[in-house]
Length: 137
Image (tube, one colour):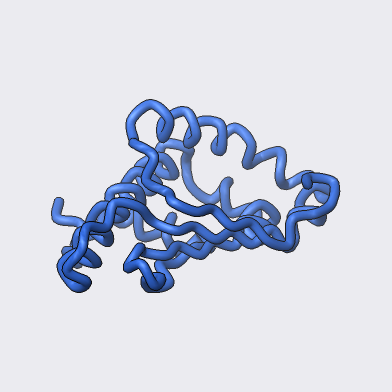
């Protein structure tokens, strides 16, 4: 299916609603910017709302959108764009650890990381994490 069509499969639409991430525009170098509230997602319990297979399909769709966004940005800026910028807010991750919801997300994260490492090039130029608890830093 065409990534920009209005015919996004229902399972991907549901995952997009449950996931707390957006395309936030472009930076000064015309790189697409992704902003995601990982702490909120970890503590939400949303991972249990759909199957792991649906999460994987949705994430692969999201990754393919990276390439579309980079092409669009390159067309608009007139220069090559081959990387994105990623921001993640970890506010709320401590409460997700305390209420034990984070442990339900870990298998999904492992699966996503394995797939990305095997099938996608490094397309993230900068990763900025904020509100990361001291325990993790």
